[in-house]
Length: 224
Ligand SMILES: C[S@@+](CC[C@H](N)C(=O)[O-])C[C@H]1O[C@@H](n2cnc3c(N)ncnc32)[C@H](O)[C@@H]1O
Image 1 (cartoon, rainbow, N blue to C red):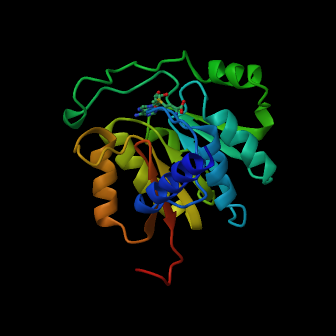
Image 2 (image 1 turned 120 degrees about the vertical axis):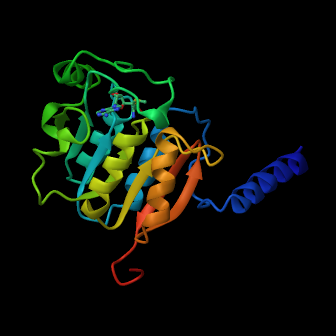
C-alpha cells in the first residue's frame, strides 16, 4: 500500500519535472477553456512583490474575474475587467467559424456588475472597460501598469492587439497569462501568441498547462 503510494507520488513528481513546470504548481483537475482558481491564486502569489494592478481581458461572466478581483484586493491592488460584454466581434480569416459574432454575449457591462455583486465581489474592487478590443483600451489612463494580466479572447486579432497593448504596461517581474495556446495549431489566439513570442524578447515562459501559457516579464537589463 505504502509502496504503491510512494511510486505514484514519485511518478507525479517526475512528470512535473519533465514538463518543466514549477514544482509548486497546484495539483488540480483542470478543464480546457476555464481558469482554475488555484492557478489564479498561484499566479497572484508570484507577483506579490510586483507593483501594478491585475487585469483580465475577456471576462465573460466573471468565473475567473471574481477570483482575480478578490486576490487583487488582498494585495491592495485594483482589478480591471475588459470585454465587449456583448460577445465576440466578427471573426477574421484566422478564426474560422467556431466563435461567431455575438457568442458569449451577456447583455452589457451592467449585467456583468450584477453578476459580480451576486458573487460577492463589490464594485469598488474593480473597474470595467467595455467595448471591443482595442477600442476599450482608449479610455485607460496612460500611467496604468499591471503585475498580472490574463488574456482570454479566443480570436486572433483582439489577442494580438491585447498583447501589443499589454506588453509595455506589465511591470518587470509581472505575469502575462494566455489562454487557448495550442502548440500544434496556428489559428485563433494561438497564432497571435506565436507571433508575440517570435517578436518579443522581454518575456520568459514559466509554465504551460491546460492550454494556458504563463509568461514573466524580465527586467529590462536581462534581455533587450
Ligand atoms: C472564452 S470567453 C472568456 C472566459 C473568461 N476568461 C472565464 O474564464 O470565464 C471570451 C470573452 O472574450 C470576449 N471577447 C472576445 N473578443 C472580443 C473583442 N474583440 N473585444 C472585446 N471582448 C472580446 C467575449 O465577449 C467573451 O466574454
